[in-house]
Length: 167
View 1: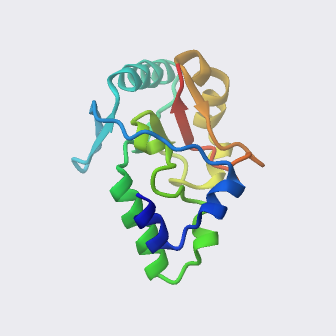
View 2: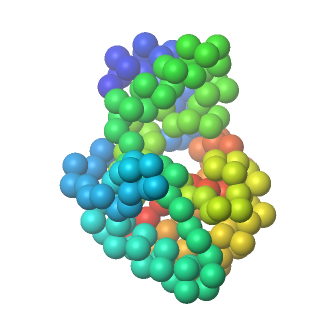
C-alpha cells in the first residue's frame, strides 16, 4: 500500500499531519442494497442489519434514505484518487474530500453515504434535508455516527451524508 501512496504523491508527513487512522479492509461482506440501476452496495453483516433497521424506521416516519456508497476496496480508492489527479486536481485538494487509500472508512464495510430523493448526492446541502434532520436525531440509536462533522480532526470537508456503523 505504501507504494500506492507514494505513486499518488501522498507522503507520510501528509498522513501524520492529518492524524488519520488506518482502516482494515472488510472481507466478510454481503449485499446490503441494490439500487434501481442494479448496482450492489456491500456492507458487513452487522452494518447491513443496522442499515435495514434504520432505513425501515425512517420510512415509518415518512423519511426515505437511499444508499449512494458503501464498501470500497483500497484498490478502488487508488483508482478514484488517480482519476481526480488525471483531471488536474492537486493531491492536497483531493485529500480534503477523499481519504487516502487504506484510510477510508468505506474499506471497513461499515460506512455509508446517504441521500434522499429531495437532496443532491454528496453535497453539503444534504444537511438541510428532512433525512439529515432524522439521521441527526435517530442514527445513533442504530449505531451510526456522522464521521466528518464541521471542523473535524481529520481535515476532511464537512460530510453530512457520511455515516459509519460503530456499534
